[in-house]
Amino acid sequence: MAKTLKILSWNVNGIRAQVGKDFYNTVKTLNPDLLCIQETKAQPETMPDLKKELNGYELYLNSAVQKGYSGTAVLSRIKPQGVTLDLGREEHDQEGRVITLEFDSFYLVNVYVPNSGQELKRLDYRKEWDRELLAHLRKLDLKKPVIFTGDLNVAHEPIDLARPDENYNKTAGYTQVEIDGIKKILDSGFTDTYRMLNKDRVQYSYWSMRFRAREKNLGWRIDYFLVSNRLANKVKDAYILDQVMGSDHCPVGIEIEV
Image (cartoon, rainbow, N blue to C red; front, side, top):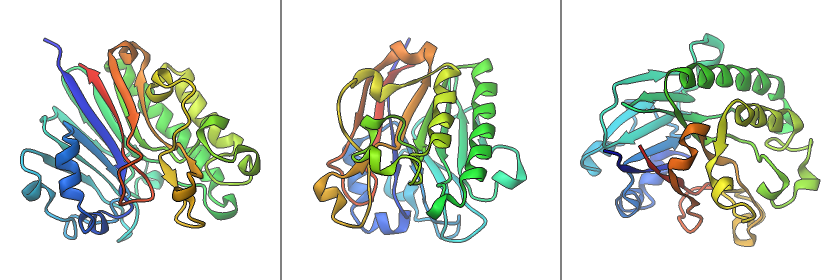
């Protein structure tokens, strides 16, 4: 019998800082079945005891080699069949950016995609990383459908950022290379759940910490839930929780029948 899962994704910009900003109560209020977290900036030994404070969840963690940098985690009420970290390529697996959980009827992939950086210094690396990520998603999708989420560090279309013309091919997150990267994923058999259900809605999931950007709503939609096309009709809701504070990102979520 199918059940509906509530899955959230949130770049917390440092889990230890977030814990000091009412994180536990926020999670309890939102009450997800699974919470995918990006940019934990914590090692196993410095990770707050989330399981103790959030009863009923198991924690799966992928930390960067460099302390206080990057990192991903998943809190899950459902025991997965298996957990895989990273992409299987050493040059991409130093920053704790990927966690894949296998469940009975789907894979869940939580990703913190590399930022192309100031002056786009990391854009060539980003292009290669996107290619490896796509190969990972395709391989999984051959076995069972995939729910893919996280901070993808790209605005897909002009509607997805406040100032597209000023940023196009000048700012990390809105170059043609990065746009092509997400387009290749979508063209490979994935659906952008938020845009599927909110065709013309202008809403953002990230705002710069500078220039009072959030107050002015000068934002970007760079946090996504993509699902294998064969799961698209099972997505009952997809949303951006832009009233939830504490990070430069807000949570995004879906409710899906699995």
